[in-house]
Amino acid sequence: MTTLFNLQPEAVEIVDADSKQAILDHLAERFAAVYGLDKVLVLERIEEREKLGSTGFGRGVAIPHARIPGISRPIAVFFRLESPVAFDAADGMPVDLIFGLLSPEQAGAAHLHALAAISRMMRDEATHAAISEAPGAEALYALLANSIDRDAA
Image 1: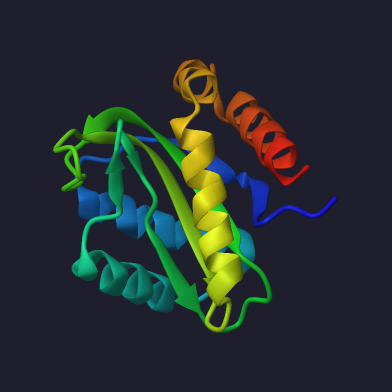
Image 2 (image 1 turned 135 degrees about the horizontal axis):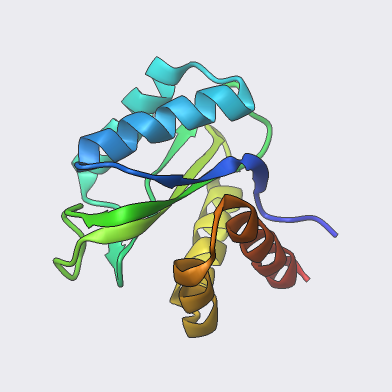
């Protein structure tokens, strides 16, 4: 079975952030640490995408995403925030679930399929509730990995 994107256990964290910029900075740091990418380049690409319009899509969820050279398939980072942060989301609500996604520069359809899968997962009431209530990063990763595998099946 092949999943639409790679999510490593070390890429799932519970984070204390106080602003949208702090979230984006931490995302870039985590992508760099887990996947061996250039933190500055990751941050530049994610910020460029945010300037086009907020990736906060409502219900407390944001999916900051970008395309980047040097990777062969979509990769992800997931944060649950300790407290919600304003993110210019479509519904005006602050976010506390952040799903970062990076795709290869030429990954048109793969990028869109991965975004759609994340969006479906985050819209699912049971999954959303379980993620919000998970006791820690390990439990979060297990829930997310299970949902990703189920979606790919």
